[in-house]
Structure formats: structure tokens, C-alpha cells
Length: 221
Image 1 (cartoon, helix red, strand yellow):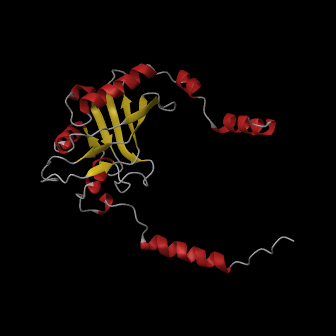
Image 2: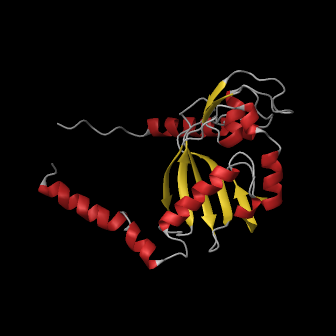
């Protein structure tokens, strides 16, 4: 149990820094309810996550954007997603979506998390000419779908890694992480795991050196 002092500190902190989500959603209502938005998000993923089989779920002004890929308009997104047969290359893939919720700041937007896993058991030329038999485990990634009042998706964001230390995809999101995990990464810097630049190492070394020159406080008596 919390002490009275801890309860007071917690109540003051929550009142100042934690938003009242229900009140915010009520103050900014959207045409679709929370349940309808989450249901529509899951429907979109069921129909269009691996390839777009139901383009009518995408609005005319649809846009996709990831950390590296995009922004892409509707036609380009459909073209690029259809250019890689994810299910054939990874027939046992599981996206493992969870934690669907409506954003209290943007009440037309559904956020959710993904921890996809799968094994490369089939080809997907030209990127994967022969199956590698390797398994990928993506780091947890944040995704979102924004809807218009007709229930069409106007914005899809994906591949934003929450903890790059997780999985075996080098801290990369989306397809970039999958390809890295099976040894088939794209040959450009954005498709490599993060490494500290020499400029950062030099800067941090200089800061550490300068801090070391500062007089040290006298030990308390």
C-alpha cells in the first residue's frame, strides 16, 4: 500500500501530467465510436496487411509513411506492397497485433503494436531468390491507422520500433528488419542497425574529457 505522502505525490503528478483520456475523447467526438474504429482497423489489417485485396478501404487521399519508406500515395503504396509476396516468402508469419486503442488527442486514429515473427521458407524474387530457412523476430513496433468519417483509411504509419534491442532484426522496422534478420538487407545505410557515428564518439569523448577537468567536490564530512 502507498503511504499518505506517496498518495498525495501520485495524485498531484497524475492530475498534472496524465491526461483524462475518456474526457478528451468526449470533448472531441468522431463519427465512428471507439469500438467501430478498432473494428475497422482490424478489418483493414485482415484484408490488406500482406497485400491490398480491398482497395476500397483506402481513401483517395490515402498516405503511408514509415521511418524510412514514404510518404507514399494510394497507388504507389498498393504497387510496392504487391511487389513483394510476403506470405509466400514467410508462410508461417504471425503479425501478433495487440493493444488497439483510439488516440485521445486524435480521435480518428487507432494505435496498435506489432511483434511479427516468421520463417523464410519460400522465394520472393528479386529480393529473395532462394529461401534461407532463417527465422525473423521483429522488435515491437508502433503502427497506426487514421480514418475519415466514411471509415476509409486516410493514413497508415508502420515500422516505428519501440525497443531496438528486442528481436533479431537489428532494430529496424517493417520489411527492412525482416530482410536484415534473414541476411538479405538492402545495400544502403538506412537498412543497417544503428551505430554511433565517429562525430558522436568524438563529441562524447571531448565532453567526458572536459568534465574530468572540473574540480571534484570535497567529500562530505
